[in-house]
Length: 267
Image 1 (cartoon, rainbow, N blue to C red):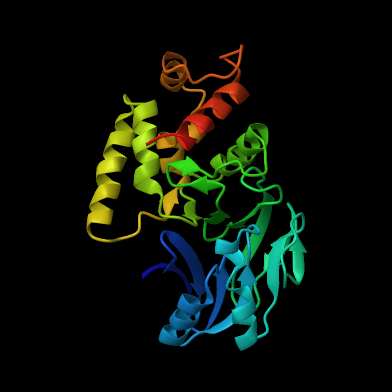
Image 2: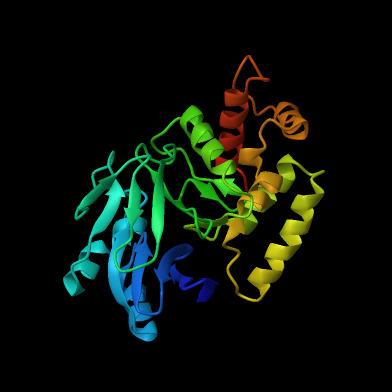
């Protein structure tokens, strides 16, 4: 468990399954939970911290993000916020880009971004005052989500939106994939010294069994190949490795698509 304080609010990481993080935002009395794929660890944390659940926030429809919602609602009836362009049981408030969520019982206002790519209707939540981003499986520390439903162009646009958030914005993604992502990043951009430093830092955290998340938008812009696919060294790696699937290897969309396909098969 980790807690990060911002004025009266804290963000607690709740590990779930093999590598998921469920995020609990609380003020010491009430709490909102982001992407509760499993109810049991959420209920345990609420009990440990003596908190009352006031809202559920969902980014997309995958079971490891929504599977715990029915059980949580058996314990307490709260509003469930989720993406307008996906079908998710129990959602009571549908959201799209431009919507604002005033989280019940918490001094927290979230703005909504549409970030399709991983799924067609994926959304992200931005706490502008606290500079927090809850981005589900769109942007990962050092990587991005697989394109299960969306297109490379959609994911590029989604990641571009996130990359332009304030550099100090904390990135609360939903999986502990960081070291695997950074190993790929180093294969793609071996000359990136910021990446070399980051790998050492993140490995030290994992050696102490600490989460590598949150990262920051600044870190991602410096080291994440899926935000850096226009960099000459990355383009050269794609070309030299024969990873382009396009007759126009200097096309950014082709570069991004090739990069994502390379990552899918990277060992």
